[in-house]
Amino acid sequence: MGATGGMADQDFDLFVIGGGSGGVRAARIAAGHGARVALAEADRYGGTCVIRGCVPKKLLVYASRFAEDFSDAAGFGWTVDTPRFNWPSLIAAKDREIARLEGLYQNTLKNAGVTLFSERATLSGPETIRLESSDQEIRAKKILIATGGIPFVDPELDGRDNVITSDEAFHLESLPERVVIVGGGYIAVEFAGIFNGLGAETTIVYRGDKILRGFDEDLRDALTEAYHTRGIRILSDHTIPKVEATSDGKRVHVDNGTVLEADVVMYATGRVPNVKGLGLVALGIECGWNGHVVVDEEFRSSVPSIYAVGDVTDRPQLTPVAIRDGHAFADREFAGMMRDIDYEMVPTAVFSTPEIGTVGLPEHLAVERAHALDVYISRFRPMRVILAGRDERAMMKLIVDRESQRVIGCHVFGPDAAEIVQIAAIAMRMEATKADFDRTMALHPSAAEELVTMRSKRPEPAHNERD
Ligand SMILES: Cc1cc2nc3c(=O)[nH]c(=O)nc-3n(C[C@H](O)[C@H](O)[C@H](O)COP(=O)(O)OP(=O)(O)OC[C@H]3O[C@@H](n4cnc5c(N)ncnc54)[C@H](O)[C@@H]3O)c2cc1C
Image (cartoon, rainbow, N blue to C red; front, side):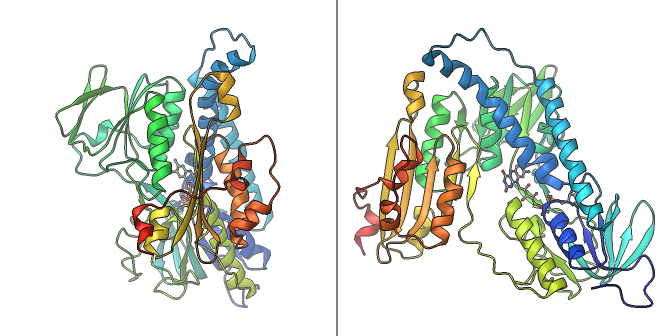
């Protein structure tokens, strides 16, 4: 689809605000369908995932796991002289990789024929965008808001300036010796694993009763126990009224009177949609409880020419979801192709060490949906840890709908959990039953073979007895 006659040069069929996971995909696909597309990015191309999210996080996770590899190696006959770690080298290597990826993202857009504006954009009308630095107004028939999310820290916190978020954690000048992480979600526990693995004294302070709210209880318990064994201190059911700066670090005041000394205090207390100053209110765009843009199943906001995808909406805040939504939006609007997106069977990982992979329903949600369940759990020591002399256990759990025998939840805790669950997700997407899992030949020796060799149901817990 091209521009209609009479449009000025600066007019577009689609203007995308935000060059992150969702925006880049939508812009590229729409341009591929022949639309005239522009995209504004205020910071760096690639967005949260590439610049300050999934990618740098995973690189830091890899770095943090070498400590264990070195000590495990001794059990396999290796002598490893005292390994030394250099934080600035890691950060420099990580930054080089991110610069490379950023370049790839920018090239993808340019090669697709997308006009790029490297500056902040806001909405000035249902079909107009204001570019802040170059002070221009651009017209577009459709506008896609893909501005993502930003970390949330309670503005009332006494000492707000003394804490950092994940954004800054990627750029610390040196590895802190003592870290306090506030929060119990996946970003909090991932960073706790990173700092602990790299040798920092790490404490998690969380206001809930147990880390990883919303995940299957057995996963939450398994990670809590493993973190305890690894020396990560978890203070649950606590809040922090105040964080002070001292001459040699920070002082964290916990609500029970405990005082923690730290070099770095990182808040991972959730993320909010990045919509401040965007112009949503003036246009009367309907926003949800935390400011997210309310969209229908076609990603359309309450103003018909304005759409939104990714973390700025209330869909699962994951890169593959933002990408899939951006792609579906572009296909629908610029090629008339309809795509059906399944938000139920979204596989996801927590890159803690040991890691978590999960897809489908956690047990408490399966029960809430009134399923009678057969639950299979296997806890075992992975082969490698035995010679390494560690006592860590892996866990695999399958939740099976008793009536249909379909596997509706798969939860894995242990090495390579993310890799295992991605593949289990295909089977579950195809509505595999427990019998299908059992009919599958085991791949031996592997950890994943436990998923196809679980024979005995867990004894009935109380919630199944009424069924
Ligand atoms: C520490 C961390 C770890 C994560 N790990 C994972 C993971 O392991 N797996 C996973 O799937 N997801 C992970 N995520 C989540 C993932 O990063 C997001 O879900 C994803 O990036 C959302 O994509 P998006 O396109 O909605 O927004 P973003 O990627 O946030 O992109 C939005 C872009 O818009 C730009 N922008 C904002 N406002 C304007 C404006 N007014 N004008 C111009 N540009 C603007 C921003 O600069 C940004 O580049 C992680 C997130 C964090 C913070």
